[in-house]
Image (cartoon, helix red, strand yellow):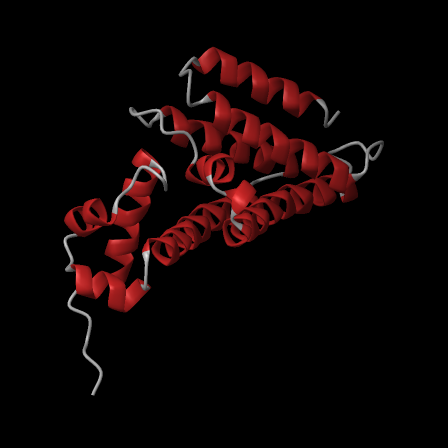
Length: 193
């Protein structure tokens, strides 16, 4: 008979995200995971196998929650331009509210691990594709209803906005200047006509 888990897996993944986000993959030891997650080493190994598998699960957990917010923003916005602006502000607000200036967990993973880890790279690509698709959906809607000019390809614009988000996420590691991010958002919005 299989043993039941004596911990909440969502809570453990949330704590793992926080630790990996703060210390990075390479800077986090198994002992720190055991201590921080408050589960036994055997439970950690039984559930996740190893640190790498836990890291992948933590990335997927983070990705699912953050992209869900973005999709909801696009779906519930009053207009296409409002959706795009809200997406940019959502990203910026979350980063500026982080007193530790950790940046974005996904961008950190991309810089630290993805270049030599195909599984992490796949999660990053999936995350970026979903963000791009959120922007693409809003831009297409705006172009169809005349709110956004049709002079540029919707997919190309979505990729531009994805890159803008990544730039914001990297910049937030070194600055909390709200004026800088306001300028970036206003300039990015100006390409929509």
